[in-house]
Length: 270
Image (cartoon, rainbow, N blue to C red; front, side, top):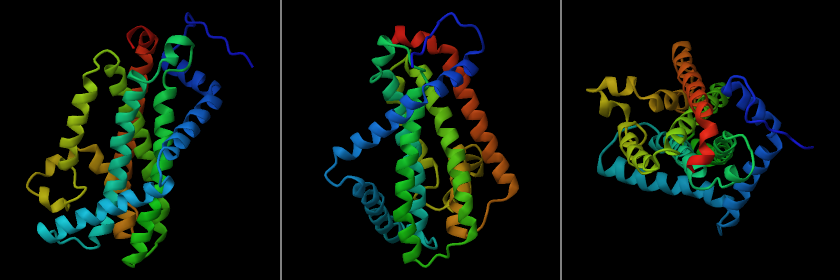
């Protein structure tokens, strides 16, 4: 099937881009599949490394923070692993999405493809890796005899919210990085700061004197939706779910709108 593209087509860019992305869905599937195959083909341990990596990080951080810093958190390995799994999905996916568009998308200069397809494929790949990383988390939960309650059925909702948020952030920063490539390095520095400002490897009580930091941190708000069913065995309150949903939707819509509004200029900037 031949797909024709007319750059002069009228219409709202955000809607037109969504329609084009749907038309190129086979290419999207191929990009996600190839990305996964390439990643694990280059690794001697393959998929096993995706399972071992968070477990090894959890072991090191558990020894450091529970012994050296005396953090008294119930089921601390589960607490820290759930945070690392969630954070790695956000940090790695957003950073890689920016790099894909700025440095790795020569395809844009040669033929027409929906510009959002690179970010969407990276997020899709990230969701696959996140799904694999949940397996060692389940093992640790069983090892610490945490009950597998019905609240765990809420996890797909929390992951969906995070996926929407990650896509929005990826598109927003990618749209700027095309014109200002130094943003990639600045963003990586910002990620380091955000990592330590978010209760991922330490308890929330550490920031009890700075509650406003938690209220303005969307990563913490979304992470809490993910952690509650795992650590507490309960579904977050309706207010928390609504807040997380609004953050996810607003971020994704804003990122999509800004990105698609400037997408036609990318081929001349990259």
